[in-house]
Length: 147
Image 1 (cartoon, rainbow, N blue to C red):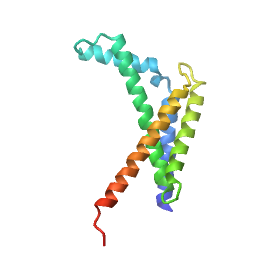
Image 2: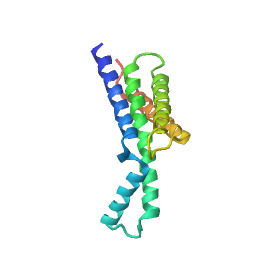
Image 3: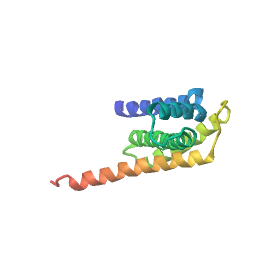
Image 4: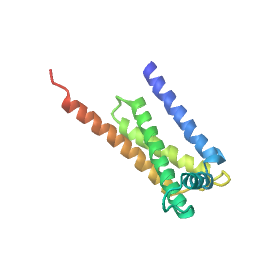
C-alpha cells in the first residue's frame, strides 16, 4: 500500500509541475524563444542568425518538452496502476486527459494558446514512453534465466 501511495504522490507532484509550466508566463513560447535567441547570439553558432534558427530550435524544444512531460506522466500512472490488467491503457488515458485539460487551462492564460496538436503530441509521448517500458520489460524477461 505504501508503494501505491508513493507512486500516486509522484503522479500528483508531476501534474503540479506540468500545471506550473502552463501557469507561469516565463514558459510562454515568446519567452523561451527570446532566451534561445540570446543563447544562439552569445554562443556565436556559425551561420546561426537569430530569428529563423531560434524559432526552429524553440519549436523543437517545446514539442520535445510536450513529448517527454506527458511520457513521464504516463509512466508514473502506469507504475501506480501495476499490476492491474489495464495499467498501460490507464497510464495513457490519464496522460491524454490531463493533456487536454492542460491545453484548456492554457486557453485562459495570457500569452498562451490551446492547441489540439499539442494534445496529439502529448498522446504520442505517452504512447512512446509506455511502449519503451513494455519493450524493456519484455527484453528483461527474455534475458532472465528460467528456473
